[in-house]
Image (cartoon, rainbow, N blue to C red; front, side, top):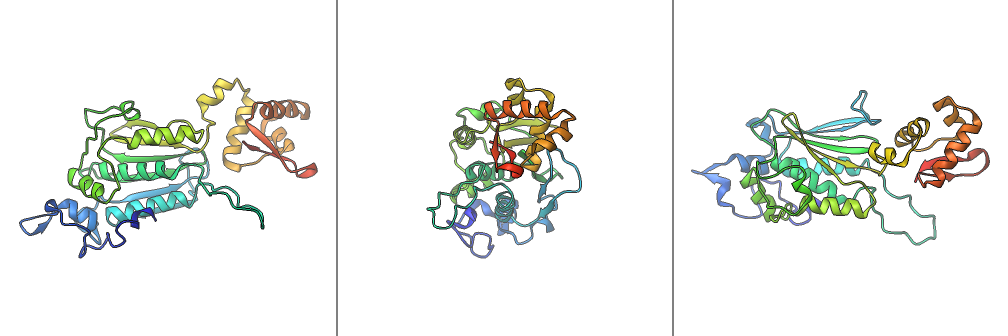
Length: 291
């Protein structure tokens, strides 16, 4: 895991990687020290946890595919939340035997995921009883943390160069010393840049009912994007279906949208021409996937 690269023993309270004067006061550990290095911070800080949820579709509905609650120290929560997401998002198909393997990159740049998780846990409101929540949907990832942006920042300003305004100074200082965070306010702008380079929509930053939410899209097929393409309702329904099931046949398109074979053929041909789907297989095995 990326968390262990610089300091593999960082989660051990008895051997911190540096001496930080703010980690203790009057020979007692500070709250930041307990949250960062404690073996079980919930003994004194029961609100400290990260919930990770994997949903089968595009809405938060049960039953979940998987659900985990991580209640250890900050470093371990970051590590496990990152591993949870990376175990779900898609990697390219391995090359056939004998062919030179290409560099394996996930569908979302890993830095984007790392930055969103670290920010959520580092900047959360530790006076709130709410948890950090990581929710993986079929089309996006949402990361919720309790608390709001400082007054100097807005969701839109995070997409431009801005000052770093840490909410939990001692925690952020420690994370900075081990290269988890930067002090120049470029993390969120790098997230935007990397998503654009990958052909993905920009991450969304917003305030919702006392929480800060980051949405990272897995593909470009957002509602706004589809509206701009001028697709009919049948095609939109098929694309939403493909986000979850990954493939569709023409006969299933007919059943899903309640249309004729001729209409299904015409709709799919249009989706092919607009480079929204691609044809896979031949003959009876022909099906279509999002491109």
